Each structure stands twice: as C-alpha cells, then as structure tokens.
Image (cartoon, rainbow, N blue to C red):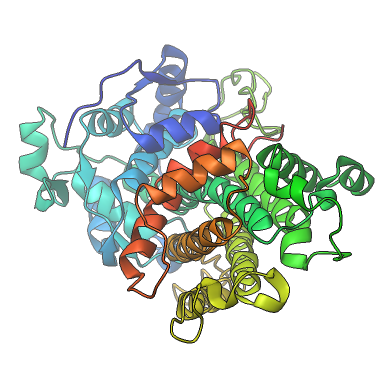
Length: 546
C-alpha cells in the first residue's frame, strides 16, 4: 500500500481516453474532481434528497430492490436500506481481483458518479477518490457476478471496504477496512438514500477486467509479431506475402498494419537475401504466408474492443438514473475512439426533476467485446502453434528433424511442441463465448444477463497460455536460426535472438526445457520482446490505428 504521487487526472467534462485508462491501470496517477463535476453531483444529489423526503415511490430510494421493488420502505429506514443492500450483496467467492483491476474499478466508479446522474453526494465520490489516491486496494473476490444489474457482488465488497466493514490488502495480507482507513487518515463512508445502490450498480468491474486483459495482451501481441517474423527467417520463408500491394487490395486496416510490421522486422535479413535465387518453393505454408491476414484480423478485433471499452469506461451504468430539472451542461467531449453521443443531453429549462429506471447496468457490450478478445487471443496462439509444428517438421522447414543436430538420440523440440498444442487446445475451450450463456436470476426479474464479468476474467489464463506458446516458438525459431549460421537475420530479429540467448542457451543436445520456457515466457509477457518490436519504427500504441 503506497500513496500515488503524480499530476492528478481530473474527473471532469472531458472523457477518459485509452491512454488515461492505461495510466490508471499502471498505478501512480491520482484522481481529482473539478468544480463542474461537483456542481453536477450536487444537483443530482438534491433530486434524490427531495425524492427521499417525498411520498411517491422511487425505486432504490424508498423501495426494495429487484423483485422486492414493490415494497415501500419507511423514511426512517432509508439509510439502513442502503447499508443492508451492501451487506446482503457481499457474497463474492474465489480468488481476489488484482490490484491493477481494482485501481481501474475505483477510478471508473468515481468517474461515473462524477457525471452527475447517480444521485450521490459529493462525499461518496470524494471517498472513492481518497481511497484510490491513498493506494488502498479493497479485498474483492473475483467470482459471483453475472454482468447484469451491475457487477453487484464485487462492487458490494468494494463498497463494504469503503464503509469500514470490509477489508483492504496491505503487504499481502487482508486487514480490516476500518483499521486501514484510519491508518490512511480517512473516515468510513456513511451511506444515505440511493447511494448503496449507485455504488453496486454498474459495469465497472467487468469493464476493468476487460481493460486489464487488453493492456496485458498488448506486449504479448507485439512479441508475437517479432517471434512470427523470426520463424519466417528460420524457415527461410518469403517476404513476398507481405508486399503492401496485396494488402491494399483487401483494405483491412489490421492486415495492412501487420504486413507493414513484418516488412520492417525482416528488412535487411541476410538469410532472406541468400535464397532469393534458386528457391524451388512456390509458396510458404499458411502459418507463415497468412500472418497478416490472421493476426491482422485479430488486431482489428482488439482495436474494436478497445473502442467499446473506452465508451463503457466513460458511461453512467447504474440505475435508476437522475435527471435534474435545471438545464444540463454541454455534452461531454467524446474520447478518442469515437464514443459518439457521450454526455448529458440538453433539456428544456422548465423540465421537472426525473429519476428514471433503465438498464444501462446490463454489460452486453463488454461481454461481446470480451468474447471477441478471447477469440483473437486464442487465434494468435493457434497460428503460433502451427508455426512450431512447421519448424520441427523437416519436410516443410528443411531444418533438422525436431530442431536437433542428432535426431533419434535426441528428441529436441518434439515434446515442447506437445505442450504448445495442449495450451492452444485449452484456449479453444476457453474461447467459447460467455455472452450466450445467460441464466435468469432474482426470481426471473433479471431474466437475461450478460456474463460479462466471467467473459473478461477468463482472458487472463488465455493470455498466459498464448504467451507460453509464443515462448516455445521463440526458443524453436532461435534454434532454427542457428542452423543457418553464419548468415544473419535482420537487425531487430538478431536483437530478439540475442535477448533470448541472454536468458536461454541453445540446445545442441536434450535437456529439460521447462526452465527455459518459463524464462522465455517472461520475455514475451513481461514486455522485453515487445521493446524489440517498438524499435522497428515510430509506431503508435498497437490498439490505435496507424
């Protein structure tokens, strides 16, 4: 637990961008609420306070919840209603959410409430911001949300920590929230009308999990481009399939970009120059030749997912929503990525206060984006596994069988490929869409749900599997390159080869490869191989089209 120290990121009329979200995910960026946001929050809270003092039934203010919405609550019990809501919904199970995910959850919840349509007091937003800025990480179990009516259970655990009844992480241990807040100089939040509901309604957990996967997979995909290019050279493949004219004729932007990346990675390779004349192969296998088409399509899916998730990160997704009668502020500026229409609609100056029930808590956009990400992650691993199979097949690669100088006595990469195949197969099962698996809840009041939280949560093991497949391919491709010495590959690919050899020696004879696979996986997943990718050109972040 450590306090963040950097220039504050304002929660204001300007929407958070993907770069902002990545900074928040990384940690060290405090939040602040600007004056315009405070004015919106105060106006919204006043509407709820008037409703709480009135006689009309208003869902979430003076009624029960879900199937119990028809039950009126006495005025003296409105605060207890919100407290009971948090306690009853804190039923999550499973491993705790990661600190990076919870940093995003806190930031996204604060940003949503600061939009001024949730009816909470400034104290609520201030408490979330203070907890975030103090570096406090609530203990939140990862399982128990179906991704509709909001991420109820995980957000309830987060709120339980805010009110001093839950727990925070400190030095790897769970500590009582009241003690952690006191030591940070913070007071527990005391809930008033509608505030518990506003805190647990919303898609912030599923959105944060999906963003966590997006940011985690970016260095893995960049490594995949480097490793795929290294395999092209190890197999003495052609760079003809990366000709820009081919990809311009199709017009798919991800494909065009990936072909450009491969041209840059392979430029200047002596291995390629050595077989430009006299190569009797007409065409390479699809796993080499169609990398722009396959990985480019995955890149397009991931870029689309990024657009959806930026919109969702800036959305107001609790229920019911509050529309103060005074004229609203101008629309919020759309974030990069085209979140068109984001903001407050203008209303007539004589419009009455309204509290309107809707369904923005339904996380279907996040679920579908996460399902698309799952397929893309699986496909990056699937084509990498095929490239490993190609490298160890002497009939196709024209390298020694299983990449060992003495096949028969040695098995080389035979069983390392089996490991890669097992992980690729596992990813195929994990890629099954979660969004189609709705189960009704709350006595059929909530009769269609998104499963977005699981859809996003299951991406982390898929990323780990794909990173390991790529690590095995990296080891195999580096071994293949060494059979072609003294010829050298391109400068960036030789840098990748040298980086690997700093951690993993060549394998002229059989030895256990488990430790090498682990070290190579760290290079892929930890960003070292991605840094090689970024040397080829002045590239934008991968998720932003060039």
